[in-house]
Figure (cartoon, rainbow, N blue to C red):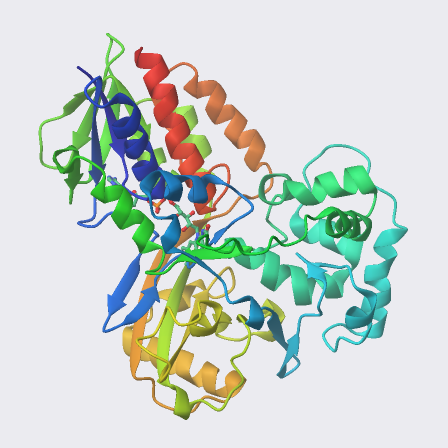
Length: 471
Ligand SMILES: Cc1cc2nc3c(=O)[nH]c(=O)nc-3n(C[C@H](O)[C@H](O)[C@H](O)COP(=O)(O)OP(=O)(O)OC[C@H]3O[C@@H](n4cnc5c(N)ncnc54)[C@H](O)[C@@H]3O)c2cc1C
C-alpha cells in the first residue's frame, strides 16, 4: 500500500491524518510523526481541578467554516461554546487607565459616530484624522505595504498606536511596521480597492450583515469568537480519538527528508532507520521545515528560513471572586507597545467563556500575554520571576492585589510566524520550487494564515492533494 508520512502533530498535521483516515482507510497508509509526547502543537488545554487553562489559542473565528465543519463531522457541534455576548467588548490600556473600545468599532474602523465621538481612547485631532479616511484617495499600484504604513496612511498615527497595533498586530504578536498587509490582512486592501475608504467599507459591511439569527433550539448560538466547552483541546482530543493509534508515532524527532531517484522519499528520525514514503506532508513550523528539507532543495530551505518568529508566553491566574473588586464584565484589554509595559494583553477568560472555565462561580480566571516583538526576552525568565512580574502588572493595571489560587504558564518560544513584507512572493517561490517534487507538501500556520481554520484547511488540502497524486 502507498504511504504518506505526516511530519508534525499540530492542528495541521492532525487535519491531514484525519482526512486520510476518513477518505483512504485501507487504500493509502499513513504515519504521523510528532516530536512531543502529546499531540496538538500550539493547541494545548490543561484541565486542573475544574479549571480549563488554555496555553495557546482560546478560540477560533466563526466567519471561517473549517472548525465548525470538522466539529460536525466529528459529531461534537453540541460541544461548541459561544462567547458570552452580554459581556462583549474590550478596552485599551493607555495613559495610565483602561479606555473602552467604542461601540461600533469593526476591526479597527469606527462605524458609529456617537460612541466614537464620546470615546476617551482617541484625542480629538486623532478622531478627525481617522475620519479623513473618507476623503483620502486610494493608493495606486500593487506593491506590498506594511500594516503600519497602511493604517497610518488611512487612519493616522494615533489609530495605529492605540488600536491597530495592539488589537490587529496582536493577532500575530507582530510589529505592524514589519507585517505585510497583503499576506496578513488582505481584506483591508480589498476594502480600500472597492470602497476607497475603510469607513465606507465597514459601514456597507454592517448594513449588509445578515441580522444575528435567533438561536435555534438545540443548536449552539454562533458568535464571532467560538471555543469548545472543554477548551480548544477538545477538538484535538476528538480528532485523535478517531485516528488509528498504530499510525501515530510520538516522541520522535524527524531530522531530515531525502528524495530518492525512484520518486519515493526517505524520512530520517533521530536514532532510527530511515522510513520510506510515497508522499510527505511537512506540517511543522517553517523554521523546522527549512531544516528538515535542507537536503531536498536549498532554495526552499532558504525561503523558509526568511520567515521570522516572535516568542510569547501566556500566564493564567485564577482568583477567588470575593478577592477581586475589579470590573471583569468584558473580554479583557490590550496594551499598546508605546506604554512600555511587561504584558501585552489580558483576557478575562471566565467572562468570555461564561461558566466554562472555572469549577464554579466562586472563582474568576484571567490570562495575561507576555512577550511579543518588543519583549521577547521576558518569555524565558523563570516561573517565579514571571509570576511576580505578571502579578505586579495585574495589580498596577487592574488593581488585583490578591494572591491567585492557581497559576499556569505556557511558553511559546518562536511560536508566532511573522508574515513580513514580501511573504506572499516568498510563498510563490516555495510553491514554484515544490512543483519539482511531486508528493511533497509544506503546510501549516507559518504560511497562508495563522488561524486554526486555515490550518485545518491546509492540512486536509495537502492530504487531498497527496491522495490525488498517489492515485
Ligand atoms: C499564544 C498563542 C495564541 C494563539 N491564539 C490563537 C487563537 O485564539 N485562534 C487561532 O485561530 N489561532 C491562534 N493561534 C495560532 C494557532 O494556534 C497556530 O497557528 C496553529 O495552532 C498552528 O498549528 P500547526 O499545526 O500549523 O503548527 P503547530 O501547532 O506548531 O504544530 C507543529 C507540530 O510539529 C511538531 N514538530 C516540530 N518539529 C518537529 C520535528 N522535527 N519532528 C516531528 N515533529 C515536529 C511540533 O512539536 C508541533 O506539535 C495562537 C498561537 C499562539 C502561540
